[in-house]
Length: 474
Image (cartoon, rainbow, N blue to C red):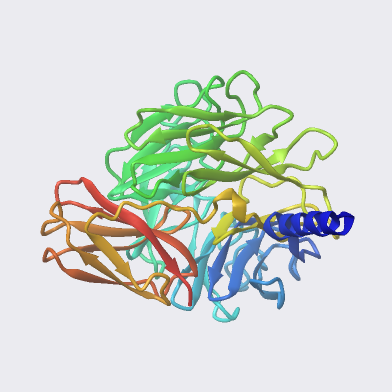
């Protein structure tokens, strides 16, 4: 009997280790400090660091999904000189964007004006190109990442523009046609630190300061640069100072985000949800000293939000990974960082979910103290439990290596209905307008990274009539 009990408890222990296990895939050295989220293409992750590299000005790197084969692809080196050819950017907070075989991102400083650049580089590290040098009159020092919508990038500059409070900008993917679309002011909110997300023809983002209470805003603006609207004025009672990028629900009607401070009287930050029209604001989690402090960006997986905090109570004090239902129920500390597996996730660090595994980076901790790349296997959490509404809609094959067939037999679908596909960060990666009804549409995501994508079918009248997930496995 003792033998059987020992075997049983050993089985339980091994099951727990298999289904809830933190693994450090890579310890950064020589500066490091990774920011943003990882980008997966095939079985390879790509990312950026703010420090480190040969010149200690940051780098672009790649690493296999299993943690092997780390490569320093590009080392930023900038002397801010237009004459000597070394003005190529420095200090990147950016999550990369992949188009074909080229990676795109931004740096916070450097370039011809020492105010940041938009760059591209081949996946093998060759062919680096400075596409745009930011400047004070039209916006500079971007903290966030580029958002690709169809054939154009959109982004936020934290400073510069007409009022020197930052701006919303757009630029063609080849580096031409840069446009300062909107200049922030104190009343509208200013000093953005995050990135944009897109739903239909609307861009959504946050500012760190300004608005009614001076504690930042959540705003929308058309992709044309018109119709700027404040949806939420942050305040201490609901959460303030939103550094992190918003996440869009698959049906495109609700936004989720974090405030670094304030919320519910504790003052340690909050997770919130709000409809895209600015109604139904919900304070989902109010953090306190025990649950964690200063939450960074969340991701949405099914009906759960996953995120990290920058700090928590003793004995850990290094931050944690948490999950919570979108209703606010079921808050759970998934993992407490312990220095050796990472410390103090920064506001730019974000998780990604692939199947039953979370992947992420933190900018401190690890064996060298310069941050880590990690995975966390936690299949009982429901990471892969993503619901869909597919009446009259079927997708095959799913998973696919790139091409999906969307068969549509839905009475609400008419000509000029739209199909939109978004990645886990809420970025639109595909869109098409139907020219016939009751048809089969071919969706090609071959140029996107492996992972989970969400599609939605919008009627010509603007109603969401179908949604679901696409799994890309090359």
